[in-house]
Every structure is written in C-alpha cells, then in structure tokens.
Length: 221
Image (cartoon, rainbow, N blue to C red; front, top):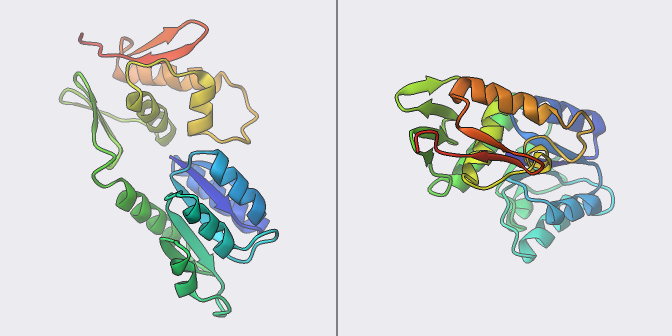
C-alpha cells in the first residue's frame, strides 16, 4: 500500500516514513501543502497523513480540495496540541480521523491500519489464483494448505501481482507501488524479491516476460 505524508516538520516526517516503511508500506513525503495536493492528485495513494500547519496551503484546504475533486482517499489529520486548530473543523473538511501532537508512533500506526481496514472492508477481498491465496487483511499467503512465510516487502510485491493476475506488470510499476517515487537504488531489487517469492511459492507461479516484466499465473493450470 502507498501512503503519502504531508508534514513540514522534516524530522518527524522522516521518522514516520522510516517506521511505516519498515511495516511494508511504500511511503512518499512532501513538506508543503500545495505540493502535497499536487502529488496526491497525481498519484494513487491508499492513505494520506496530513498535517494542518503547512506552508503553501494548510491541511484544511488540502483536504477540502481533495474532497471537492471527488478524491475519497482516507486522510489522517495531525492537529496541534494547544487547540489552536479544532479537530471538528478538520473532520468537517472531509478528514477521516485526527491525531493530536505529540503522539505515540504505535498509536499512529494503529490509526493508519484502522483507516485502511475501514476503507477496504468488503472491497479488498482475499485474492485467489488456483491454489494460491493472498489475504490483504491478514497479510497471509498460502499455497493450498501450505502456509507461506513472506516478509512485508515480499507480500507487497506479491499482492500487486495478484491484483493484476494474468497481466504483465513491469519493474517500474512494481517499484512505484511497492517502494516510492524517491527510490534511487538499483531497479534490479525487484528481481531479488521475485526470486525470493519463486523460492517460497514455487518457480512456476511467476513468469518473466522478457523486456516487459512479470506475470502471476496459476502454476497448477
């Protein structure tokens, strides 16, 4: 899942991004409200963590603009401790939840997961292809009756392939959805995770389409 953090306190933003990335999310970070609105409308995000006090455009206006444009991406709004900004006003602009600074990272993570569950309940169904089962809710993978242990990043790669089962998915698309737009490492990192998934699932589940990308197929077909 891709998250966008719009927070001008750079140290806090880096800390949140580091923690959420470790949980398996692809995280993009911007520090300006106007830029955050632009990035949010250009990309596809599963959730936005949005500060209120931002340069360029405050969080209320960013959230209001997204909702006016028909964007229903869940928004977790970060509010000031001193009550200068009213949480109710944030919710009135279309925010889904709010969290008052300072806050515990554990609490933020719980709120993020709750919002994602709320959004995807009934929509993000268990993904099945032949005997392969990929459950986004529990983050569990199984081949038949065999449970397959995967890391957070491996799950994210597999889920993206499973959502588009039978289609060719390029390395660039996997990088964009599983890592983030600021990733500047070796694109061959995708091959590393594909190889790991083949070892764990069985080599026939993921085929390589030379020059194009990868395809998740039914190994039992």
